[in-house]
Image (cartoon, rainbow, N blue to C red; front, side):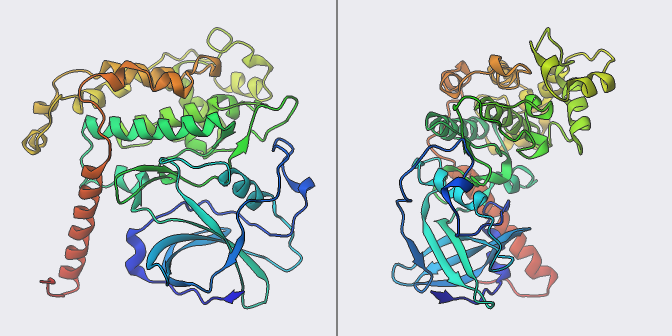
Length: 404
């Protein structure tokens, strides 16, 4: 197996990939897999080594591993390599790696990041290190949403939302829930296609009497039933996360920014009204209900529509040209009622009221002007222009002459 030296190249900072990395170990037994996984045959993808890859630079780093940009020497193709740390030769903690690998072997779709293969190498301590190789994407939504130089007209929001929901709908048809939908885990390829990534928290669902961890999913995107300790649960937790994410495309600020479970539940109540049996039957049976009720006894009115309205109007013009962005008044043409209605459905407090993504994709929002496009080329171009602008600005600050 290859012994690799990883070198960082700051030029690769324009590439991004999922950063929620988890500790893994190849030495595992079938009993170590979460019980809600189906019985499977041996993994269908062979484990290769890294001899044919050159390490170009580090893309990102998490608490349990790193992501690198690598170049396949024979094909001259760039890929993203997700590398997992080994803390020691006897550190046998395979579950996260194995679960992600099992899920990836089930998925092949144009809106899912393409998994290429598993690789292994030896580190300096002679421990086996295991890697997952993926297609390399251009950027993630986190970078695009919070880039002030990138405009988000309604057609871009619709196209992005449509592709996210299509990818999630496919995942759910495979009886898999992602459990960590957020902007950083939604990648955009060079061809302008949404790619759902990072399946480190994903799991299968549908088996009876299986207890699932409710402390899952990034807090800002965690569904209320998870915050209240519900288990088991199902694909509807992804629907809530998708609703929060799409709202973030409108507002370009987090919808629910709690720093603790209690704070997040309070923020949800202030946005969507109190959680009680009138809106969420059987909620009082959930483990954290008593604590929630004690801290959120005061009546709360639903404010979501008033919060989203200015943003739904701001991006609501049928046809947008560059001059339309010179002043916000010229853009306040009509209220995007269909979009807000879909968000209200996705963000239902009662999970049983959230639509399946098959039904969500049939919503009138996607049938009205402006119709979603087939790709996000405009967003990719805007991101590239922004990156070029940043490079030119940095060169100017450093006293470097612009390149011809």
